[in-house]
Length: 272
Image 1: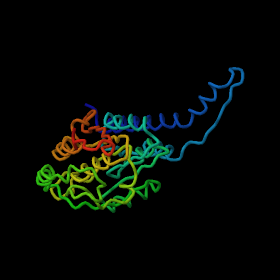
Image 2: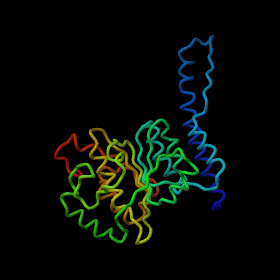
Image 3: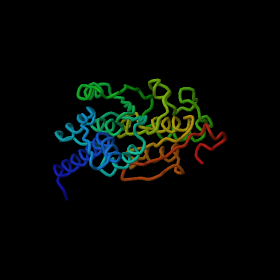
Image 4: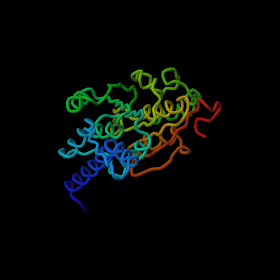
């Protein structure tokens, strides 16, 4: 069995490799294309400055001993989707030491982080001031999860596809920044709020609202990831409101759902 130090070093090396891969794609793709269009006898060399966000990520993960909570395989699952979709609109529930990585993997797109701990936001913003993050307040408690699930499954309002701000479903969160509701998100990561003790907010409304936002987009589809599905709330609420029929894959403790717009298919069941 590897020691904690060995595991940390391995994960850091993997993260550095991911960042380097994206740096290579963004920095050298135009140069490679220019070579393919020029005669062999007239080679050209183009030099481009390193992208600041990618450089900062590379330096951070090369020098820190603190690693993201997700494993390499779990990170790779969402990284593959971001590789296909970026630059895109990427909404992340949670702010942490992996936030710089997510922003870098979505270089050129917009990445927003939602966090319930104000002091934690100040700490991370001090370290990474370029990150776009917002403080949010949840009105749920983890111990209410069973009651919230029962009420939502019985309430027809929770099956209506509508802007979450105007939904009458108890699970719909109406207090996020306006950008959360106004932007059509291509990728959503639910890795917060806290959900490991009774008084914690739990991720009940985060999961439900993420699914509602995805269904309410004008067209297209949204890739939604939910982390910590080894826990009861994340397991049950993701299956119920992101729908098992939309489940694409699971790696370790993370699930990947692809949710299409329901606005282009009137009368479509909440969970087909």
